[in-house]
Structure formats: structure tokens, C-alpha cells
Image (tube, rainbow, N blue to C red):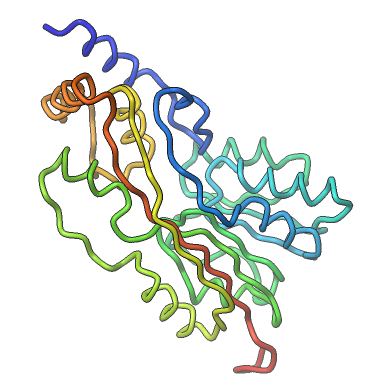
Length: 263
């Protein structure tokens, strides 16, 4: 028995995975960040927004950072709202966004947004699991903006393939699909930027925590169910020093025009 492997797997099973705070990974895994600085851009938009909604906010960490930056610069919306589907994350988001008197609605990611038509002049989202373009268009006020950073095609495919064997890569997360969805919802795409980024894991506990946290990389992942592949990953990392993959991200900004279909 590899005692080092067993200790790492026990650690990987013990780390809490609620929220989108990735500070535990420091020194154990790295992921290159996109060059556009999403939180900074969102903070700038929040500085002039009157009412802002963050969809699928996770634990509210990034939205809180952007709201804090807007407030520090003397701005920020009078109305702040967010949605989140997973109860532990929704609880974290309520706590994180309390200083901004935020409304946090716990709703499924693919459910209608529980807000009125044209309620927000800014809707944001970082790494949505699904994008409800029609609902985004509905809750945006005329002239309002959707600003988001989406996960692109093939993200962490090397990790998926190592754990599950070669998997087909669909286009459901493609930029083209997003542009088509936004356009169909009556939104005008103002900006799209793409980036392919390096991801690196330095021990198998980090791999296990990542897969428990980012559940769509290996659907229905469990440490016991994938013990053999985790052992193989552990051996590879010991031999090569790390496991390297890539992620894809894209920034998309859309606007709701005035005077279309009664808006």
C-alpha cells in the first residue's frame, strides 16, 4: 500500500468544497488567469449601475470583490441581487453579500429568474453551468448590459480523459453557441475575447478536491469510484512533477437595445 497516496486521498476527501474560494489550492495547483481581469471589469460596470444581478453567483466571492471595488471608488448599484442553485453556496452568498443588502434567491440554474421584466441594467455571471439567454434578455432593462466570463470548449479535457478515457468534446460551451443564443434573445453582442490557459496539479489531493468542487469535469466523481485512476495520477505526478491540462475561457458582453419588441 502506498501510504503517501492514502494520506493524500484522505486529505482530498476532507476539504470542504462549498463556494468558489480556491485559496486551498495555493502551492498545490495553479490555473492561469485570463488577461482581461473579469472582477476588475465587473467592478467598473458596477460603479455606474443602478440595479445589478449576478446569476449563479456561487458563494458570492467574485461578485463581492467587484462590489467592494465599486464602493471603494465611490459607486455601486442601489439594488443588488444574486441567484444560486446549491444550498450551501446560497448560504455563503447571503453572508458574503450582506454588506450590500443583496437579495439572494435560491433557484435552479435553468429555472426562470425570479425578478420582473427590465429590473436590472446590469446582469453578470462568472462560469455559468447553463445560460438562460431569454431570461437574461427579459430581466435586462433597455440599454442594459450582460457581462460574463464563460467556460469554453475543452476545459480540463486532459483531466476528464485521464480519469474516464477519451471523451467526445461537444460545442455546447462554444463562443458561436453563446453568440447565437444572445442574438436569438434580442441582445447585441458588443465584445468577445477568448483565452486558452495552463492548469497544473502538483499532488493528487488537489486533483481530488478539484473534481469534487468542479463537478462537471468528471460527472458523478467520487474518490472511491475513481481510486484506480487517482492512483495512476499520483504515480504520474511523482514521476513527472505535475499533471498539466488547459482551460478555455471567454469574456462576452451584450447589450439590450432600446425599442425592440416593445422594450
